[in-house]
Image (cartoon, rainbow, N blue to C red; front, side, top):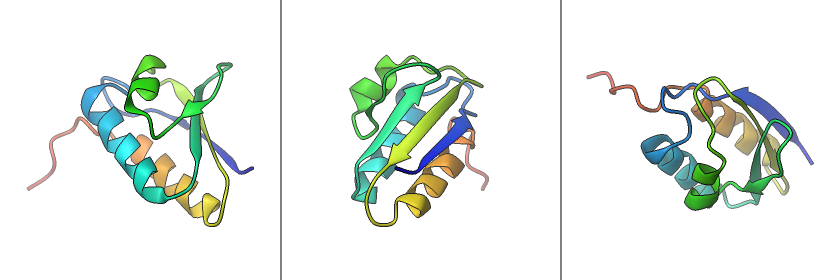
Length: 92
């Protein structure tokens, strides 16, 4: 099963808006994806409550894993998302 590790760039970590954007992206990927904090148990990355319950803070690393067709591409896209400050105001 492919995995990726990434530091969460959002200023507030994976809470509220960043967690929502992340879980929506996972849900639309169409394959099972898990997320785990360093040394923790993996949880369903499509579950907003489970992702927020991890308590991931800015700069902490998480490991994503996925299985299924296109898992490598999906993980690459999710890593790119988490490596972006999702709390930053979009540029006009």
